[in-house]
Each structure stands twice: as structure tokens, then as C-alpha cells.
Length: 191
Image 1 (cartoon, rainbow, N blue to C red):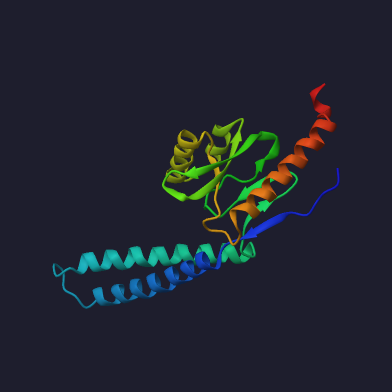
Image 2 (tube, rainbow, N blue to C red):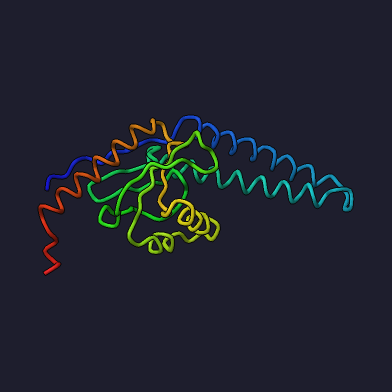
């Protein structure tokens, strides 16, 4: 089987700009509030201003870390290879979804925004992928997707710099090629 190059889709400029603005505005506001809280006396809102400054500063730090990660990934948000697909645009840490785990691919409407569509990869072992996510709230989000869409793997173009049709074509072509190659060449370890 010849290896075809990895197909990537980048994060949209709008999302990157939003991340930059979040980092800068939260950083400036957080530092100003921390500095301002220094001049207030206890009981005159100092604790509230101090806590708000800390929260905004932490948000700014996470936004900067996100920007560093994107720079390291050269702004790529989805990788589609002969092995499977990896979506980092959602911020979930589940790694590559292997084609061998995919049963089928469906297009479904997003229940929270009917103008958006999801490319839903129905997988054999959803718990395996849900358990890869270490963050509790993100894991819960994957569990809810499993309930609503019958799969935790739901990919949209909301944060991507491509059309839904481009994404769908790339994913379905790669999955179809994988299926054809693996029907022609059965797994040697299955004897």
C-alpha cells in the first residue's frame, strides 16, 4: 500500500484572531485589575477585583499556551492520513481515530445550531476514545455527543478554514481507500 501525504486543514483566521484578542485583552485587563487592587483597602471590593484579575490573567495564560501549540502545529487543526484522522480543533485530547475503529460516517445536523453540520464517525469502541480525554468536562462533552449522535467523534468546520464539503470529501475518500485496501489485504494477524 502506497502512503499518500497527510491532508491537513488549518484553523480559521477568525478563530486565531479571537484567540489573539482573548490573550491580549484578558492579559491587559487582568494585569490592570491586579495592579488596581493594590491601591484599594480591604472591604472596598479589593478581593473581588483581585480575584477577577487573577482569573483574567489565567485565561490569558491559557490563550497564549493555545497560540504556542498552534504555532508548533503550524496552525493545522485536522490531520487526515492513511491511518486515521486527528482533530485538534475541538481541544479534545483523544489522539488519532483509527480507520479500523470506524464503522461508518454520517452527516448530521448540530442539535444546538441547525445551520452547522457534523461529520459523525461511528466507531466500534467509543469508550476507548472517551477514556483518552483526561479533562473531566471535555470527557463529559464526549459522553453527551455519544448520547446525542451515537458517537463521541463529531467533526465540524466551525473552527476550520475550509468548507464542510471539502472536509467531508477528504475524510470519506481516505476512509473509502482504507476500506478498499484492507478488504483486498486481510490482516495477517487474524489467522
